[in-house]
Image (cartoon, rainbow, N blue to C red):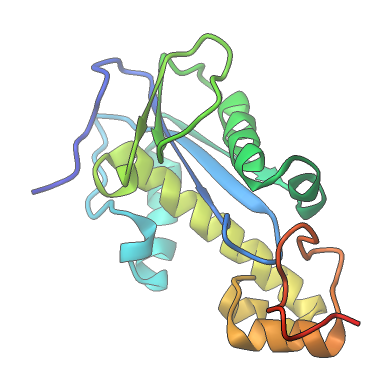
Length: 199
């Protein structure tokens, strides 16, 4: 059974999703996508269920075939200031705000959202595996964020962000314990287990 094309029945329905909520380092990145029903994209799915190669192949197809798309980014400093939940909302708001067409309806992955102006919305738990527009947004959010972490890895190779993308792997935490933090780490997060210390 394939993913549902449209939830609201409105043409300008934007799917929204974010990537990087559970990371120790790097921004949270969100995408908003309004698909074109006349230009179907085969193979859309939750980005976590796709290989990196498949995500990278789908990204340019989404960008080419969608009616419009946009990406919003919230920095680690902003995450520390407003908390990760609010930062996820803000990243989605920034993505929606940058869309070339104003959506008539927002389809949000997850169970919580802060309204964007007066645009009606619906939250969908595991929506990235149920609705095409959210799946497309999840792929863009993931690939754009991974690209950013690859770039940061060039400067901070000891943390191996190219591989772990800032998530709390054992290797990442060991590097934090050994080398300390960077401006890209989220200081409001528990960067190390209780038995380890930054000092």
